[in-house]
Image (tube, rainbow, N blue to C red; front, side, top):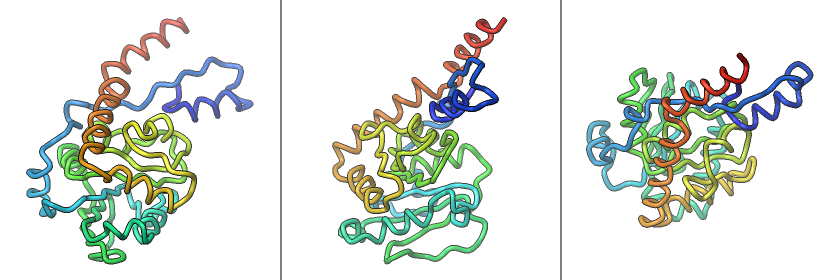
Length: 229
């Protein structure tokens, strides 16, 4: 059992597993805990500006783990076309253990550090307008799925397990690998209008309820066990 279509394809091509049945069952989450919250309340509790467009990035030591693609996000935020709206952006980073600058390319930055509480993590996702997951490769993409469950669209690269999580221009944007320019396009598109953002947010939550709910996953595992008995 693999958590993404990409991992399943890898297993089917491998010498070790290609003779065996392979199933894709995504990683689940508590969709009652990871759910849309009130943005104003979440921002007030976290000390974040109420009127800025908040761009969220987070992973364990994501700013120093090259696979998490933080440098691609920074490059995207410094591209001129994105900087047209840069005065209204605010970058929030979680998962960092070291000190962080207070701004990047003129964009204010707030680092909230390690988060070991799922309630607070859901609140962080809810405060954002877009979550950027610029990983080079992911077996699944848990941060992306958690963000969608909280109704926050995701911008990522069109790669690996993230293809299973993020539906291009439906609940987020999958940029060309590994183009900071197209990643900037994705961020800009998600933030382009309130109407578009509401549409993406609703689709994000719908995807989480239909695909990531633990109840649904239990049924899928039962089906697998019945086949192999």
